[in-house]
Image 1 (tube, protein in one colour):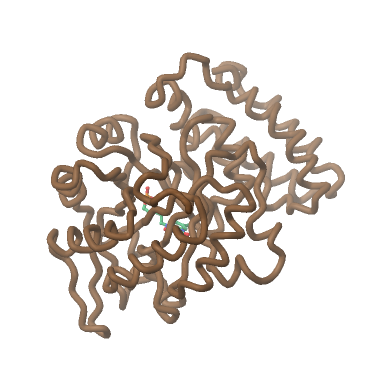
Image 2 (cartoon, rainbow, N blue to C red; image 1 turned 180 degrees about the vertical axis):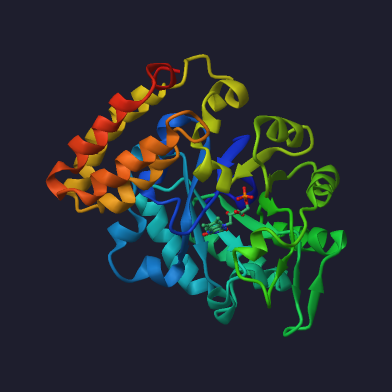
Length: 342
Ligand SMILES: Cc1cc2nc3c(=O)[nH]c(=O)nc-3n(C[C@H](O)[C@H](O)[C@H](O)COP(=O)(O)O)c2cc1C
Protein backbone atom coordinates (compact mmCIF):
# COMPACT_ATOMS: atom_id res chain seq x y z
CA UNK A 1 0.00 0.00 0.00
CA UNK A 2 1.31 3.45 -0.82
CA UNK A 3 2.26 5.93 1.88
CA UNK A 4 -0.60 8.02 3.29
CA UNK A 5 -0.79 11.38 1.52
CA UNK A 6 -0.17 13.34 4.72
CA UNK A 7 3.18 11.59 5.08
CA UNK A 8 4.44 12.09 1.54
CA UNK A 9 7.27 14.58 1.27
CA UNK A 10 6.25 17.52 -0.86
CA UNK A 11 8.36 20.44 -2.04
CA UNK A 12 8.90 22.81 0.89
CA UNK A 13 10.68 25.49 -1.12
CA UNK A 14 10.39 29.03 0.15
CA UNK A 15 9.99 30.22 -3.40
CA UNK A 16 8.12 28.87 -6.41
CA UNK A 17 7.19 30.10 -9.87
CA UNK A 18 3.50 30.05 -10.67
CA UNK A 19 1.62 27.96 -13.20
CA UNK A 20 0.87 30.33 -16.08
CA UNK A 21 -0.92 29.18 -19.22
CA UNK A 22 1.01 29.98 -22.40
CA UNK A 23 3.92 31.29 -20.33
CA UNK A 24 5.39 28.71 -17.95
CA UNK A 25 6.08 26.29 -20.77
CA UNK A 26 9.05 23.91 -20.76
CA UNK A 27 11.49 26.31 -22.38
CA UNK A 28 10.66 29.18 -20.06
CA UNK A 29 11.11 26.79 -17.14
CA UNK A 30 14.41 25.55 -18.51
CA UNK A 31 15.74 29.09 -18.70
CA UNK A 32 14.39 29.96 -15.22
CA UNK A 33 16.10 26.85 -13.88
CA UNK A 34 19.42 28.28 -15.10
CA UNK A 35 18.73 31.37 -13.00
CA UNK A 36 17.69 29.45 -9.88
CA UNK A 37 18.57 25.83 -9.24
CA UNK A 38 16.31 25.53 -6.20
CA UNK A 39 13.07 27.41 -6.81
CA UNK A 40 10.12 25.06 -7.30
CA UNK A 41 8.70 25.25 -10.81
CA UNK A 42 5.14 24.60 -11.99
CA UNK A 43 3.81 23.71 -15.42
CA UNK A 44 0.98 25.62 -17.02
CA UNK A 45 -2.41 24.20 -16.04
CA UNK A 46 -3.07 21.09 -18.10
CA UNK A 47 -6.63 19.78 -18.15
CA UNK A 48 -6.95 16.08 -17.41
CA UNK A 49 -8.47 15.34 -20.85
CA UNK A 50 -5.59 17.19 -22.55
CA UNK A 51 -3.13 15.00 -20.65
CA UNK A 52 -5.00 11.87 -21.72
CA UNK A 53 -5.52 12.49 -25.39
CA UNK A 54 -3.31 13.93 -28.08
CA UNK A 55 0.44 14.06 -28.12
CA UNK A 56 1.48 13.33 -24.54
CA UNK A 57 5.10 14.19 -25.07
CA UNK A 58 4.11 17.58 -26.37
CA UNK A 59 1.63 18.24 -23.58
CA UNK A 60 3.54 16.75 -20.65
CA UNK A 61 7.14 16.35 -21.79
CA UNK A 62 9.88 18.19 -19.96
CA UNK A 63 13.64 18.15 -19.57
CA UNK A 64 14.81 16.45 -16.35
CA UNK A 65 16.93 19.53 -15.69
CA UNK A 66 13.73 21.48 -14.96
CA UNK A 67 13.12 19.48 -11.79
CA UNK A 68 11.90 19.87 -9.11
CA UNK A 69 8.73 20.29 -11.14
CA UNK A 70 5.03 20.26 -10.29
CA UNK A 71 2.34 19.39 -12.81
CA UNK A 72 -0.76 21.50 -12.33
CA UNK A 73 -3.92 19.67 -13.37
CA UNK A 74 -7.38 21.08 -13.86
CA UNK A 75 -10.62 19.07 -14.02
CA UNK A 76 -13.47 17.97 -11.80
CA UNK A 77 -13.88 14.27 -12.59
CA UNK A 78 -11.93 11.86 -10.42
CA UNK A 79 -11.49 9.13 -13.04
CA UNK A 80 -9.84 11.45 -15.56
CA UNK A 81 -7.68 13.13 -12.93
CA UNK A 82 -6.56 9.72 -11.69
CA UNK A 83 -5.54 8.62 -15.19
CA UNK A 84 -3.73 11.89 -15.77
CA UNK A 85 -1.98 11.64 -12.40
CA UNK A 86 -0.72 8.13 -13.20
CA UNK A 87 0.71 9.34 -16.47
CA UNK A 88 2.31 12.28 -14.66
CA UNK A 89 3.98 9.86 -12.26
CA UNK A 90 5.40 7.88 -15.18
CA UNK A 91 6.72 11.07 -16.73
CA UNK A 92 8.65 11.80 -13.52
CA UNK A 93 6.86 14.84 -12.10
CA UNK A 94 7.61 15.53 -8.45
CA UNK A 95 4.18 16.66 -7.36
CA UNK A 96 0.65 17.22 -8.64
CA UNK A 97 -1.24 20.39 -7.91
CA UNK A 98 -4.98 20.74 -8.40
CA UNK A 99 -6.17 24.06 -9.80
CA UNK A 100 -8.91 25.54 -7.60
CA UNK A 101 -8.25 29.15 -8.57
CA UNK A 102 -8.86 29.73 -12.27
CA UNK A 103 -11.96 31.84 -12.93
CA UNK A 104 -12.14 31.69 -16.76
CA UNK A 105 -15.54 31.09 -18.39
CA UNK A 106 -14.25 28.03 -20.19
CA UNK A 107 -13.04 26.48 -16.96
CA UNK A 108 -16.33 27.37 -15.21
CA UNK A 109 -18.33 25.67 -17.97
CA UNK A 110 -16.62 22.43 -16.93
CA UNK A 111 -17.02 23.15 -13.21
CA UNK A 112 -13.38 23.15 -12.27
CA UNK A 113 -10.87 25.83 -11.29
CA UNK A 114 -12.07 28.46 -8.80
CA UNK A 115 -15.65 27.19 -8.70
CA UNK A 116 -14.35 24.02 -7.03
CA UNK A 117 -13.92 26.16 -3.93
CA UNK A 118 -17.69 25.86 -3.48
CA UNK A 119 -17.31 22.04 -3.30
CA UNK A 120 -14.61 21.31 -0.73
CA UNK A 121 -15.85 17.75 -0.15
CA UNK A 122 -15.54 17.08 -3.85
CA UNK A 123 -12.03 18.55 -3.92
CA UNK A 124 -11.14 16.25 -1.02
CA UNK A 125 -12.50 13.35 -3.05
CA UNK A 126 -10.43 14.35 -6.11
CA UNK A 127 -7.28 14.69 -4.01
CA UNK A 128 -7.88 11.34 -2.34
CA UNK A 129 -8.52 9.62 -5.66
CA UNK A 130 -5.23 10.89 -7.14
CA UNK A 131 -3.36 10.04 -3.95
CA UNK A 132 -4.66 6.45 -3.96
CA UNK A 133 -3.63 5.93 -7.57
CA UNK A 134 -0.08 7.33 -7.33
CA UNK A 135 2.68 7.83 -4.82
CA UNK A 136 3.03 11.53 -5.60
CA UNK A 137 2.26 14.36 -3.18
CA UNK A 138 -0.97 16.12 -4.15
CA UNK A 139 -1.32 19.81 -3.35
CA UNK A 140 -3.92 22.50 -4.03
CA UNK A 141 -3.77 26.06 -5.38
CA UNK A 142 -6.81 28.13 -4.48
CA UNK A 143 -8.06 31.67 -3.99
CA UNK A 144 -9.02 33.10 -0.60
CA UNK A 145 -12.63 32.86 -1.76
CA UNK A 146 -15.09 33.19 -4.61
CA UNK A 147 -18.15 35.27 -5.48
CA UNK A 148 -20.78 34.26 -8.04
CA UNK A 149 -24.17 35.86 -8.52
CA UNK A 150 -25.22 33.26 -11.06
CA UNK A 151 -24.45 30.42 -8.69
CA UNK A 152 -25.65 32.44 -5.68
CA UNK A 153 -22.36 31.90 -3.91
CA UNK A 154 -20.44 34.25 -1.68
CA UNK A 155 -17.52 32.58 0.06
CA UNK A 156 -15.56 35.63 1.05
CA UNK A 157 -15.06 35.40 4.78
CA UNK A 158 -11.90 34.08 6.40
CA UNK A 159 -14.02 31.28 7.90
CA UNK A 160 -14.94 30.12 4.39
CA UNK A 161 -11.28 29.82 3.45
CA UNK A 162 -10.53 27.94 6.65
CA UNK A 163 -13.45 25.60 6.04
CA UNK A 164 -12.23 24.86 2.51
CA UNK A 165 -8.71 24.09 3.72
CA UNK A 166 -9.96 21.98 6.63
CA UNK A 167 -12.22 19.89 4.45
CA UNK A 168 -9.60 19.35 1.75
CA UNK A 169 -7.01 18.48 4.36
CA UNK A 170 -9.22 15.57 5.43
CA UNK A 171 -7.92 13.89 2.28
CA UNK A 172 -4.36 14.30 3.51
CA UNK A 173 -3.46 17.46 1.58
CA UNK A 174 -0.88 19.38 3.60
CA UNK A 175 0.18 22.10 1.21
CA UNK A 176 -1.97 24.98 -0.02
CA UNK A 177 -0.91 27.78 -2.31
CA UNK A 178 -3.31 30.63 -1.75
CA UNK A 179 -3.74 33.54 -4.17
CA UNK A 180 -4.73 36.22 -1.71
CA UNK A 181 -7.70 37.68 -3.60
CA UNK A 182 -11.16 36.29 -4.24
CA UNK A 183 -12.18 35.23 -7.74
CA UNK A 184 -15.27 36.97 -9.07
CA UNK A 185 -16.87 34.47 -11.37
CA UNK A 186 -18.95 36.80 -13.54
CA UNK A 187 -18.16 40.12 -15.16
CA UNK A 188 -14.37 39.99 -14.90
CA UNK A 189 -11.91 38.44 -17.34
CA UNK A 190 -9.23 36.13 -15.92
CA UNK A 191 -6.80 39.00 -16.35
CA UNK A 192 -9.01 41.41 -14.38
CA UNK A 193 -9.43 38.70 -11.76
CA UNK A 194 -5.68 38.91 -11.19
CA UNK A 195 -5.83 42.65 -10.51
CA UNK A 196 -9.22 43.97 -9.46
CA UNK A 197 -10.27 42.02 -6.36
CA UNK A 198 -8.07 43.48 -3.61
CA UNK A 199 -5.21 41.47 -2.17
CA UNK A 200 -5.92 40.29 1.37
CA UNK A 201 -2.69 38.69 2.57
CA UNK A 202 -3.93 38.81 6.18
CA UNK A 203 -6.28 35.92 5.37
CA UNK A 204 -3.33 33.78 4.33
CA UNK A 205 -1.19 34.83 7.29
CA UNK A 206 -4.02 33.98 9.66
CA UNK A 207 -4.47 30.62 7.97
CA UNK A 208 -0.83 29.81 8.68
CA UNK A 209 -1.25 30.98 12.28
CA UNK A 210 -4.29 28.79 12.82
CA UNK A 211 -3.04 25.78 10.85
CA UNK A 212 0.68 25.85 11.66
CA UNK A 213 1.20 22.25 10.59
CA UNK A 214 0.23 22.92 7.01
CA UNK A 215 2.64 24.31 4.45
CA UNK A 216 1.03 27.59 3.43
CA UNK A 217 2.37 29.40 0.41
CA UNK A 218 1.11 32.87 -0.47
CA UNK A 219 0.68 34.20 -4.00
CA UNK A 220 -0.42 37.47 -5.57
CA UNK A 221 1.29 40.76 -6.25
CA UNK A 222 4.85 40.04 -5.05
CA UNK A 223 7.27 42.22 -6.98
CA UNK A 224 10.40 42.70 -4.89
CA UNK A 225 12.86 40.86 -2.69
CA UNK A 226 11.76 43.02 0.27
CA UNK A 227 8.10 42.03 -0.17
CA UNK A 228 9.05 38.37 -0.39
CA UNK A 229 11.19 38.61 2.74
CA UNK A 230 8.35 40.30 4.57
CA UNK A 231 5.83 37.60 3.57
CA UNK A 232 8.22 34.86 4.67
CA UNK A 233 7.89 36.14 8.24
CA UNK A 234 4.26 35.01 8.10
CA UNK A 235 4.03 32.01 5.77
CA UNK A 236 6.17 29.13 4.53
CA UNK A 237 6.55 30.10 0.91
CA UNK A 238 5.91 32.72 -1.75
CA UNK A 239 4.82 31.93 -5.28
CA UNK A 240 5.78 34.45 -7.95
CA UNK A 241 3.83 34.85 -11.18
CA UNK A 242 4.02 37.88 -13.43
CA UNK A 243 7.13 39.36 -11.87
CA UNK A 244 9.08 36.29 -12.98
CA UNK A 245 7.93 36.91 -16.55
CA UNK A 246 8.64 40.62 -16.48
CA UNK A 247 11.84 40.62 -14.41
CA UNK A 248 13.34 37.14 -14.40
CA UNK A 249 16.63 38.49 -13.06
CA UNK A 250 14.90 39.19 -9.75
CA UNK A 251 15.60 35.51 -9.09
CA UNK A 252 19.33 35.98 -9.32
CA UNK A 253 20.75 35.07 -5.90
CA UNK A 254 17.47 33.38 -4.89
CA UNK A 255 19.44 30.20 -4.17
CA UNK A 256 21.82 31.98 -1.82
CA UNK A 257 19.17 34.12 -0.22
CA UNK A 258 16.35 31.67 0.37
CA UNK A 259 17.89 28.22 -0.01
CA UNK A 260 21.21 28.57 1.83
CA UNK A 261 23.31 27.77 -1.24
CA UNK A 262 26.92 28.89 -1.26
CA UNK A 263 27.78 28.25 -4.93
CA UNK A 264 27.32 31.46 -6.89
CA UNK A 265 24.46 31.72 -9.38
CA UNK A 266 25.17 31.90 -13.09
CA UNK A 267 25.78 35.26 -14.68
CA UNK A 268 23.60 36.36 -17.58
CA UNK A 269 26.44 35.45 -19.93
CA UNK A 270 26.61 31.94 -18.47
CA UNK A 271 22.84 31.55 -18.67
CA UNK A 272 22.93 32.51 -22.34
CA UNK A 273 25.90 30.25 -23.07
CA UNK A 274 23.83 27.36 -21.73
CA UNK A 275 20.71 28.46 -23.59
CA UNK A 276 22.05 28.44 -27.18
CA UNK A 277 22.98 24.71 -27.35
CA UNK A 278 19.75 23.83 -25.57
CA UNK A 279 17.79 25.89 -28.11
CA UNK A 280 19.65 24.18 -30.93
CA UNK A 281 18.39 20.86 -29.62
CA UNK A 282 14.86 22.19 -29.12
CA UNK A 283 14.77 23.58 -32.66
CA UNK A 284 15.82 20.17 -33.98
CA UNK A 285 12.92 18.72 -31.99
CA UNK A 286 10.55 21.10 -33.75
CA UNK A 287 10.16 23.81 -31.09
CA UNK A 288 9.00 27.16 -32.44
CA UNK A 289 11.59 29.92 -32.45
CA UNK A 290 8.81 32.43 -31.71
CA UNK A 291 8.22 30.65 -28.39
CA UNK A 292 11.89 29.99 -27.68
CA UNK A 293 12.72 33.65 -27.85
CA UNK A 294 10.11 34.63 -25.24
CA UNK A 295 11.97 33.55 -22.07
CA UNK A 296 14.95 35.69 -23.09
CA UNK A 297 13.11 38.90 -23.90
CA UNK A 298 13.12 40.34 -20.39
CA UNK A 299 16.51 39.09 -19.27
CA UNK A 300 17.79 42.68 -19.14
CA UNK A 301 14.54 44.30 -17.98
CA UNK A 302 15.16 47.63 -16.29
CA UNK A 303 18.78 47.80 -17.45
CA UNK A 304 20.37 50.07 -20.04
CA UNK A 305 20.16 48.44 -23.47
CA UNK A 306 17.06 46.36 -22.61
CA UNK A 307 15.14 47.76 -25.59
CA UNK A 308 17.99 47.13 -28.02
CA UNK A 309 18.27 43.56 -26.71
CA UNK A 310 14.59 42.91 -27.39
CA UNK A 311 14.80 44.55 -30.80
CA UNK A 312 17.74 42.39 -31.77
CA UNK A 313 15.93 39.21 -30.72
CA UNK A 314 12.84 40.28 -32.64
CA UNK A 315 14.95 40.90 -35.74
CA UNK A 316 16.47 37.43 -35.37
CA UNK A 317 12.94 36.08 -35.56
CA UNK A 318 12.15 37.86 -38.79
CA UNK A 319 15.27 36.54 -40.55
CA UNK A 320 15.67 33.11 -42.15
CA UNK A 321 14.97 30.21 -39.73
CA UNK A 322 18.39 28.65 -40.28
CA UNK A 323 20.12 31.84 -39.10
CA UNK A 324 17.94 32.37 -36.06
CA UNK A 325 20.35 31.12 -33.38
CA UNK A 326 23.43 32.72 -34.88
CA UNK A 327 21.55 35.99 -35.18
CA UNK A 328 19.99 35.84 -31.71
CA UNK A 329 23.25 34.94 -30.00
CA UNK A 330 24.94 37.97 -31.58
CA UNK A 331 22.67 40.17 -29.47
CA UNK A 332 25.05 39.49 -26.59
CA UNK A 333 27.79 41.52 -28.27
CA UNK A 334 25.62 44.64 -28.02
CA UNK A 335 25.20 44.37 -24.26
CA UNK A 336 27.35 45.97 -21.57
CA UNK A 337 29.88 43.33 -20.38
CA UNK A 338 29.25 44.47 -16.77
CA UNK A 339 25.60 43.43 -17.10
CA UNK A 340 26.53 40.18 -18.78
CA UNK A 341 29.04 39.19 -16.14
CA UNK A 342 27.05 40.07 -13.03
C1 LIG B 1 -0.59 34.55 -18.24
C2 LIG B 1 -1.06 33.91 -16.96
C3 LIG B 1 -1.53 32.60 -16.98
C4 LIG B 1 -1.94 31.99 -15.78
N1 LIG B 1 -2.29 30.67 -15.80
C5 LIG B 1 -2.53 30.02 -14.62
C6 LIG B 1 -2.68 28.61 -14.56
O1 LIG B 1 -2.52 27.90 -15.55
N2 LIG B 1 -2.97 28.05 -13.36
C7 LIG B 1 -3.08 28.80 -12.21
O2 LIG B 1 -3.33 28.25 -11.14
N3 LIG B 1 -2.93 30.13 -12.24
C8 LIG B 1 -2.62 30.74 -13.40
N4 LIG B 1 -2.36 32.08 -13.41
C9 LIG B 1 -2.39 32.82 -12.13
C10 LIG B 1 -0.98 32.80 -11.50
O3 LIG B 1 -0.57 31.49 -11.21
C11 LIG B 1 -0.98 33.65 -10.21
O4 LIG B 1 -1.89 33.06 -9.31
C12 LIG B 1 -1.41 35.08 -10.47
O5 LIG B 1 -0.76 35.62 -11.61
C13 LIG B 1 -1.10 35.98 -9.25
O6 LIG B 1 0.28 36.00 -8.98
P1 LIG B 1 1.23 37.24 -9.43
O7 LIG B 1 0.58 38.48 -8.90
O8 LIG B 1 2.55 36.94 -8.80
O9 LIG B 1 1.27 37.24 -10.93
C14 LIG B 1 -1.93 32.70 -14.57
C15 LIG B 1 -1.48 34.02 -14.58
C16 LIG B 1 -1.01 34.62 -15.74
C17 LIG B 1 -0.47 36.03 -15.68
